[in-house]
Image 1 (cartoon, rainbow, N blue to C red):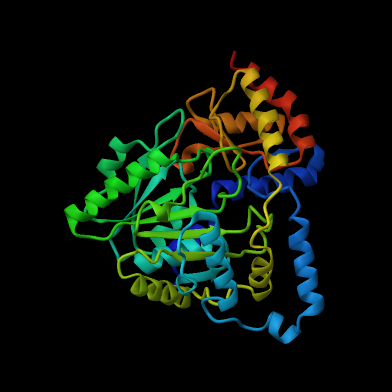
Image 2 (cartoon, rainbow, N blue to C red):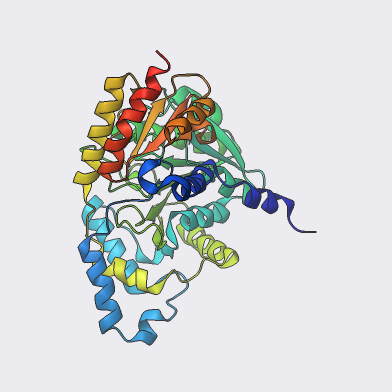
Length: 393
C-alpha cells in the first residue's frame, strides 16, 4: 500500500499553490492582463546583473567537468569559506565554514535542519502567522507543531503566549524575520527577550532548545535592522536562501549555518549532514554554488519593492483597508473586512483579485498580498480593490 499521508499532500496543494494554479487557468481563459495574481512570492525583479554575468562567465570560462561535477556532499569548501567570511564581515560573528551545509534553497535547509534535531514527539513552536509548509516539514519529521500567536497589530512576539507554548518537549522555535506573511521584522529587544526566555527554559528543563532562523528575506528590508540571531542566542541554526535576494526562486540555492556556539555543535553538524544524506539533499547544484561564491556581496534592487510597497499600502489604506505596516519581505498582510477571510477571497475573485487567506498561516481574518509583481499590475488592480471594499461599506 502506498503512503496515504503523501497521497493526501500530493492531491491537496498548499493554499498558495492552489491559487497560483488557478491564476494560470484564468489567464489562459481571459488573458494575463485581466487577472491580478498576488498569490505567490515569485520576484518580478530580475536577478542582479552581476549574478547573470557570473553565471555566463562560469559557463564560458570554467572546465565543464569541474563546473557540472559533484562537489563535496556538504558543498564546496571554497564556497563555504566565502560565506563564512561574509558572515564575519557583515555581522561580526565567527562563522565556521566547516559548520556550513549548502542546500537546494530554504525548503531543503529547513527540512534537513528539522530532521537533524527532531525525535518523534518533540515539539516545534511556530510563531503565527507563519509559512504553512513549516507544519508539513515538521510533521513529516515526526514533530508536533505548536502555534504561538504573535501580537495583532505589529505582529511582534507575544511572550505571554510563547511562555505557554514552550514546554519540556520543545526542541525548536522557528523564527522568520522579515516575516512571511506579515512583512514584520522582529526588533533587537524582541530577539533579546526571546533569547532570555529560551535560556531560562533550557536551564529549567535541562534540554537544548534551538532557534531555527529562517532567513530567505533577510536582505529585503526598508530601513529596519534585522538582528543576527546567533549573536544573541547560542543554540541557533540559520537557514538561508538566495531565492529572494538574487531573484532565483527556481534555481534553489541556500545554506544551513550551525552556530559554533551551539552545544555539541560538531555532533549537530554531523546530524545535519546525516539528515541531508537520508533525505537525498547532498551536493547542492554546483553552478549555483559557484555563483554564490562570486556574488556573495551582491545586493537586491530594493527600490522597486519599496516603491511597490508604498504605492500599494498607501492606496489600500486610503480605500479603508487595515494593513499591517511591513518593514521587510514583499507581502502586505491585510485585515479581511469580514470575519471569514476565505469568503472575502472568494468575493475578490469576482474582480479577478487573487489573494491568499490567512487561515493556513495560522491567522484567521487576514489575507496575504504579494507585491513582488510589476508596478503595472498593482496600478491596474487598484480600481478593483476599491470596488471590492465599497461592497462592505
